[in-house]
Image: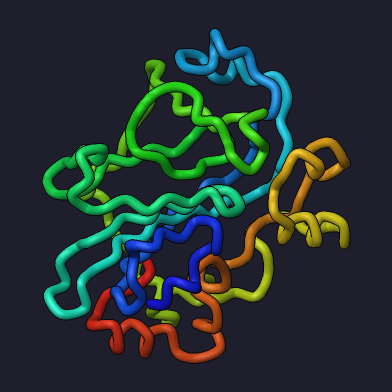
Length: 231
């Protein structure tokens, strides 16, 4: 994989091109970014603390990449994708990463679902000049998916997963404005305007680091990389 596939502002100069990317996708039925919140409630009772939302849309695809050495297939980097260019690269041996049976512990932020390392509290967003935050809530009622008991679906096998390259939207896209807003970077100006509702996301293999994959045979990309694929 070329590092140019990642957002320019998210790239880490220490991450080289040519690594193999194991890409894991997570689907959420609805997206609602918490714009105005009561900080005293968001950690333990986020539904009560969430006052106003933007970026409302049906369907939400989020992902992470595990970047492997192309020769040994040893994991070297973890990439946590987030809104706009806010993704983060972490060395696999980073002391910040907690592991469960060899798998990193990750957490989706409330509402907008960007991926972070496990934790609690506000995570200010650089793209909004820290005026808004993602929230990692640690109240009761949370649940987790453990790697050993969570089945994976190989998206590159389009005979079984034709939806992975579907050319439509995973959610309502009823107006031209919504469709245009879905593809624009998030920023304070967008929130101040009328981009409250946007279209649902594109199929996983048509977005993020997968440019051009659906124009060919995704399984061929997978085989060329040594058998790993998008999941």
